[in-house]
Length: 327
Ligand SMILES: C[S@@+](CC[C@H](N)C(=O)[O-])C[C@H]1O[C@@H](n2cnc3c(N)ncnc32)[C@H](O)[C@@H]1O
View (cartoon, helix red, strand yellow):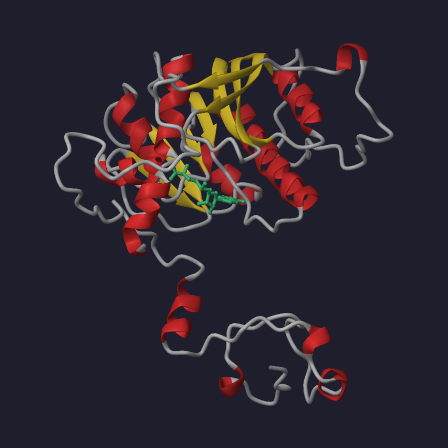
């Protein structure tokens, strides 16, 4: 076991480190490009939800632009610098971030907008799919401002209940929309990528960052899209069949049989959200999750002051002050 077990279980994780990519996601974009030649003729690109930056690495290496600014990368999280990549730290669903991105393209258009955005998954499928759809639509909104006519938009999509609505919305703006599943994306994941080519907004369309694109009242039980409004997009798997299967474990001697050497991650994340929890755990101050039903009633009913979260806390009971000890 230990730190090499992930290398065995996840061949793309291991290959990413060995090839200097910051994340295994690099292979998803590379395999999408193998299938769709996404980078052909591209000199300017936007990478939305870019941290830790493997897609930006791929873009800056593969596209033909020169000098700083041919890739604009955006993420909520800080990202270590990359040559030729302008970075913006911000939320792509916020108007201010969208405006900042657009400013970098003053007078010019992007050829390609990509978005690998993923929300913090809650495990509640409807919530996760909704959040994912919101990210995709925020990305599409930004794309409508910066993309050149005929340009390409590639975005992570969860193939959930309301995915048909998303496809229909994307088809309003692009002449071709399909759903692609790179080999490096696990079969067990509902993740796929919408590959939208030929940006061609409807006549008279005025890009407006303030108008949400998702119809909040849409409900697939009562509001089925059918007839010409129901768009079923082609589903394409990409990455050669000889490529590694992301759901399999592989032995650690892929290349020439020489002794396996562990490779550390190319770029560890900068202040990731879990860092505080790790520090507390090292100090033995991380509390176990407690459920209200496990607490003695008297303690749950009469807290000496309100709890910020009724279910769990980062602090162990001994470092909490004036809070009931429910463990
Ligand atoms: C799967 S990771 C992206 C990996 C990246 N493509 C790479 O190759 O390194 C998803 C990213 O989405 C970002 N994200 C999620 N919601 C966001 C939002 N509202 N605005 C900006 N970034 C967001 C997360 O911070 C996370 O870094």
